[in-house]
Length: 107
Image (cartoon, rainbow, N blue to C red):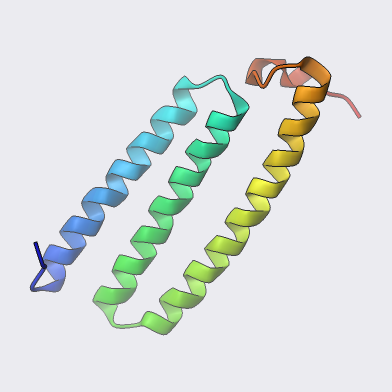
């Protein structure tokens, strides 16, 4: 299916964006694993990125959209690196990545 007008494109991108948001929020609420929570946050960030791309295409401002998407990607990488460091620290301390054990980390 090739969208012929911007409203069809917004509908398709909007549908996938909402699907990614629902999947990300569901994963955040249900999971107890730290890595699954990081993956859920990644899904949420990808949904925001997809939304930015769709809105930039429809409004006709691709340069602004590219700048915003690159900024979101940089922030996403920083979040993943920090979360990876926290995950390593949690695993070294508890031998598990269970989120409920995060209160044992000190210092």
